[in-house]
Amino acid sequence: MKGTLYGVGVGPGDPELMTLKATRLIRDNEVIACPGKAAKETVAYQIALQAEPALQEKTLLSVEMPMTHDPEALERGHQEATNAVEAHLREGRNVVFLTLGDPSIYSTYLYVQKRVAAHGYATELVPGVTSFCAAAARANVSLAEWEEQLHIVPAVHRLDRELDLPDNYVLMKSGRRMKEVKEQLRRSGKDVVMVENCGMPDEHVYRSVDEIPDDAGYYSLIIAKEPKK
Image (cartoon, rainbow, N blue to C red):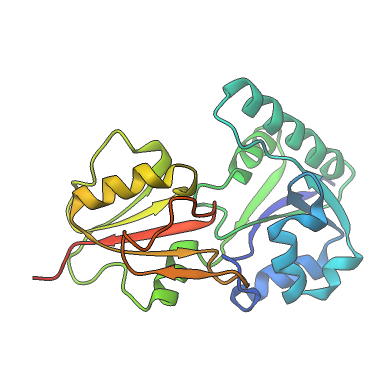
């Protein structure tokens, strides 16, 4: 019998937002993979541990996922992660791979899942609360109403295009080039709110472009909405 790989979303940061299914899978399985050099130091582990203390008794698999645009380094990192996961699956052990937010939204976990599935192993996605839904709730704003469109984009990859589609945007992965993102937001004329480190102890909410610091952290999510007439 081969093991199954579960991609489990742990939510954006607040452990109370983890799902019952996520905590059950942690309890019921021995091998837990965390994306990072040292599993216990990863954000995903720290969130999950608060919701499910049984995590500290599990076999941890540290899976380093490179944060780079170098295609060769990405390919090498994804393959090494796949090899590490499959070593357990071959022995019939399930692997619960923890990932921030929801594993279907811009998650590096997906690159591992595609490879594992292609090699004949069973895989399953377990949804988690998305960062943009949590950020909207924290800011006490809607993401879309009535006929409004919602566009979810990785901002760092979209700086060469204006925010000229109708209605509302969610900008993810903004932190590294925040100064440029802010200029793009100013040109758009949209109402802006940003939540940095949503659900974490060092969370900050910014209510305008001018409030947002140029050196905002990696976990910064922006909601840009068409002004109400």
